[in-house]
Length: 320
Length: 284
Image 1: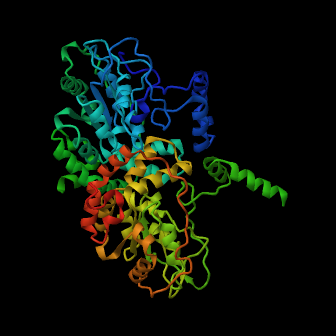
Image 2: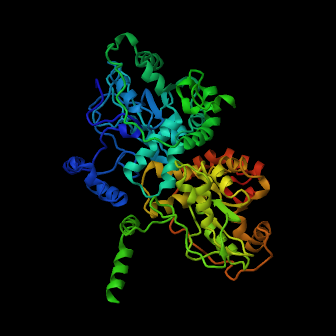
Image 3: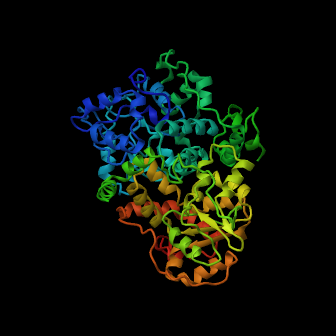
């Protein structure tokens, strides 16, 4: 795969490829996808989801998604070599596309970028067979690497031990961005989906910005040297340099990467503005976590996070 | 009256999601839903308004409806049936400016005659990390109550409940149910904004075993005389059918919560771990 698949969008969970559909429902799914957004939203959030699941199948992050992998076509399978674990809405889809464009990486049509495999095991035992089934999602020609990027993993604290068990050698990629900016994008998503229970949805958005908490949970099961923390703002500023660092971390030959690959970042939809007093409250809310993250990730450049304590911002994170 | 009865029966047959979608069409929203109208409720001549005297902050599926009704049964407590026990006011405030007008709006939701106290109990507040500073600004003198339950049992009950109520059957819903069980992580945020003696930590299992003793302690904490309500042992808002939780997954959750429960018992030594079988001393 040389570029992002058609229909993929830039960030986080929305960068998943098309979900697998239930048998015989592809046409319905295509048809549903063509219904203009304003008509789709005319159906309320709850019944809309029920209808889509019934007619067009489930998304990989929905309970009941069929976890069985498509046929491997005789290719060798095994644990993925890399897993993007988060954070959602932080450009993971963009970065996965760039990584997968390397000739040494095998991508696979039909596998969502975000498999959400471990997301399904919070209340279930994770057996050896579940691990083997996970591996079957990753066929690759000999000599090539392969992986997935599920932005939700880092925010699902039950995932870390399962991931360490099923892919003990995998290298993890964790992309973060200014948490206040992430919050604003998350709010836009809530407004788009018109989910009725606003508090729970906002709590989810807020929680995913506590990066250090999530990273510490991963570190309970994965050694630090197997996790690369990327900063989206640094990737925007210097995509080629950050991509080369990613390649080196994954053991990919940087010389084999076509120089044109690390293109300028896709344009972002602007998040709705929030009141400065709200920004200040959020800065306070995240301050301790940002300080902790900076301690865990020395390469983090806080100057690029004005609202989280960088230059030009309130400076709280630095002061504490 | 045949049609309304048929309509009511048809309404009950709808899924919870379709039921609320229909109510929304008629402009009817629950306090936890986006469209809820926070215009001040009407009050009678003898009612005055002001910040609540007590606020229950947690936890979902921790027996809070039962305990709130027991508190409301006290003659010194004013609880109007037309005002939901969960005001949910701060649930809507994460992305909004919060100043004197918002403080005044919140206070308007607590009418009571002179000589009585009043309050609310929104179990969601505990794990909404933006709430403590706002609550401290709007009700700095309010006494806080939290009713905790074995976090693994709470998870199971809470997730089953949310799904039955029509929450999205997604990993995010599961993650939300897990998140609510980090009691000490969330309570520490409240202790940043309220003195420790303004918070009463109760344990659901202890209250269920000996409601009279813990209710007396609750009344004392709220500055009320002792009182014995009629429905002391009545079940309120029961849990319904709970989802399966496989043994290995249960153990994973116990491991996940262990350090938080340890921190909780250090912060609040009255928590009796032996009442939480998943975390009892010596249970590994």
